[in-house]
Image (cartoon, rainbow, N blue to C red; front, top):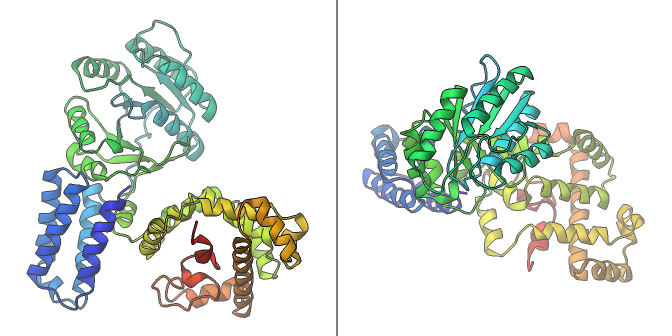
Length: 478
């Protein structure tokens, strides 16, 4: 999401930053380009116009144009206005501090992902917030909609209201509320029916359900891939029902992203969550600061750290760190690292979250590189014997041919992988000479990460801070 917009804006701001001084004409020209980029990304015209006016007014001030780094100042103003457009600083949490059960009403058009999002939200509330949740499907129009929520509930281990054939939505809502009270449920999630378009029957049904259940939250689920139509849907719903927030689904898709940028301004309600994939744990609180950072190529280190914390086993990581410090980093350890990269979303995802890695990500895309390279590397290591993985020096020419044949790769690929492993081992020896991880932390503490524009020295064998070892070479011709 936002890749095209991000590329356009990065180009504009690189040119601004490359100039020693700026005048008002330079800024206005850049803002015209930004406006075109926003409109091409499907941002609603009134939203784009208001954004550009606000940025231009602040950016043409003497304090900016006569500063030492006017280009950087303009980028900061754009970043601040983007955050404001997306909802201001900080994620907007769910309002759950009420007398239980807190009722969350999920509304939206058919096909927007309401049912799956309901299950994702139930799982999130249970696992991250420690809430006892109950889910109920009020969709009696779509075939097997209630059964779908029941199956999803079993997958995420969240209770669902038993299905009573023929019961109507308002009666289901009443029964769900009574059941939630009897079972001492903290949060009741009501998945309402959708339509192919906004109609009076849909709105009347939602108003009736809301009247019975008195929801704490009314969340509009919108498919971000529908572009400008998503904005129109949001306008229609916000005029009919008392929305408290928006959930954008398919935020991992290859779309222009304008729906996300327009949604807050159009509805006046915060975007509370973003669906980031098909898996039932692929939902995260929507953070305006992080999204703005990604759009402007500033990375999203906070999300990266959170993703790492959620996917990497701490004990395994500690054990690996200890082995590396003792010089015991073998191919089993390398394989473990590669799999963790896959679990965290692959090379593209990681590159997109790291500051200063925008160009590396673009280079990967232009050369046709994708996460298959991680699969190839895993296959190479998997084709080795346990002894060869523990002692790579055993791999002579004959063994390398066998490994290449077994993994469907070339001997050259095997050699590149082994070279990468050797360089990582040498890097670990250098770190030991610097005093271990603590010494390295002290060395990097004053200036960011090596190779990422922070001014710290680069570590030998770490590919200039872009990718570990000789992975850049391994990526070629894949």
